[in-house]
Length: 91
Image 1 (cartoon, rainbow, N blue to C red):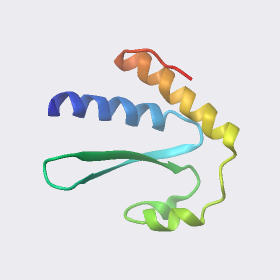
Image 2 (image 1 turned 180 degrees about the horizontal axis):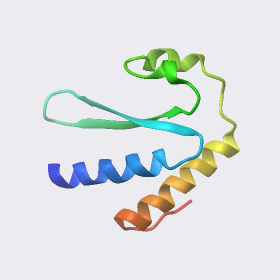
Image 3 (image 1 turned 135 degrees about the vertical axis):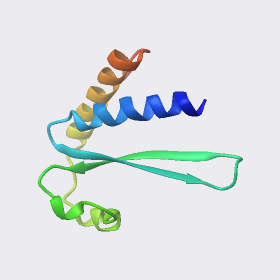
Image 4 (image 1 turned 60 degrees about the vertical axis):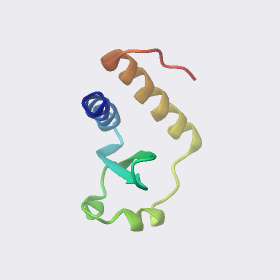
């Protein structure tokens, strides 16, 4: 299962980084013991090199992204993930 998660993480990261407005995909993993795991991806916007490294907290100061851009980006990631990893993109 860990191997499968690793492959899925690679596919999701590549799909996010293929977006024209994204410079890098960051992965956060949070767990509270072995009972559960939270995995989240954060798209570092292109044009903000100062956000490299551990500066995730200052991302709150970035300008808001238009809802239609968020929806279009999510749909693009879903299609790319379905094409490279399998499954069906919905939404």
